[in-house]
Image (cartoon, rainbow over all chains, first blue to last red; front, side, top):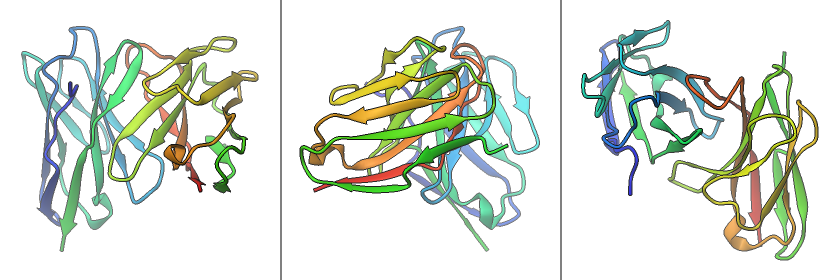
Length: 108
Length: 114
C-alpha cells in the first residue's frame, strides 16, 4: 500500500510559483513529512520538512493541512534549475519511505 | 567538508561475483543508510545503522550485508551478485533516525550485473 501519493508530472512556467501536492493519509501523528528532490541522476537533496505547522526556508514553503493527510510544497519563483523529481516522504518507523515522486518541468 | 562520499562511482559485475560498496561521511552523523533506486522508481531502503555498532534491515535487505565499520563508514556487500541487483545505490547519513533529522545523500554508485 502506498504511503504517499503524488502526481506523476507537472509543468511550471519560469518565474511562477510551483505548487506540488502530496497525499499522506496514513502518516502517524508524530511522524514528520519530508520533501526531497533529485536532479538528473544525482543523490537526492533535502528541501524542507514539517510536522503540523507550515514551514518556510530559503528554498521553499511547506503547507500541511490541519488533518495532516496532505501537504503542498511551494517553490515561490521556479527557475529552470528547479527541474527535478520531487519526493514527498513520510517517516515510518524510523525510516523514510519514498514514492515515485513528481517530475517537475520548469519551462521558459 | 566533503559530506557523503561513495566508491566506486561505476561497477560492472558478472553474476555470482561479490563486491563491497564503500560509504563515508565527515559530518559526525550518528545514522547511516543504504538505498537502491531502480529506473523510474523512488528509493528503497536496504539497510540502515541508527548508531555506531547497530544495523537493521530496511525494505529490501535480501542479497545484501552491511558493516558499520566506525562512526564515519558504512559498507554494503553483495556476496553473490544477481542481475536483479542492477541499480543505482545511494548512501545517506543523518544526525539521528527520529523526528526531523534530514538525510544527506552521496552521489551514488551505478552497478550493472550481467
